[in-house]
Image (cartoon, rainbow, N blue to C red; front, side, top):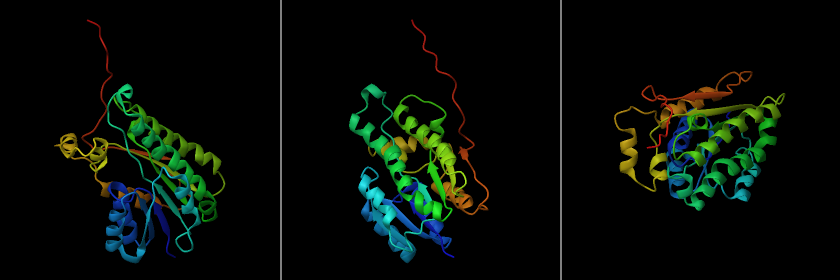
Length: 248
């Protein structure tokens, strides 16, 4: 029997790679995003297996309307909360408030609103929720206060949601990746491709396809198994030391 996945942020990166992976695997794929032209291009590639929906995660009514899709698209087995972004890595006092608000509304408010709206169907179908957090949820860095704060929320939200859903058969997983080369840094820097290229130069980062393979593995585990959280990095990435400020 065919299954259905809803992927937020399907226009690039992890979301687009996951859409292709699951469609190739015989799933029906609902993909949301703000860039309609990219959704249409993805539909051209994937055909009838893909339903493109132009949705901004900051639009609560639009987000909640995703719980009202007609069958078979409304029979959602897996919610992949992938949509997210980060403000520039300026110190918080120097960060534009509109960017801060955009990040919180997308990474936190929209994610919670969509998850809550879809829970009745996910409980009915004993489905699965995969939330995209980040290693930034655990390891702080300068300029990451807002983004890392949202990802720490996503991680804890995932763990606590499991408590709320105990006994329903619904699985919840927090995915916490390190450096993966997608459009993430280009968007974060306002379109600075050189900054993105410099960040990933010579370090063999993870790819969107690496994460899509992980999502696929999780989705196909036996239903009695729940992976609570997975933290993953490229081999070339590790942790920095403590920063010490010294006067004089």
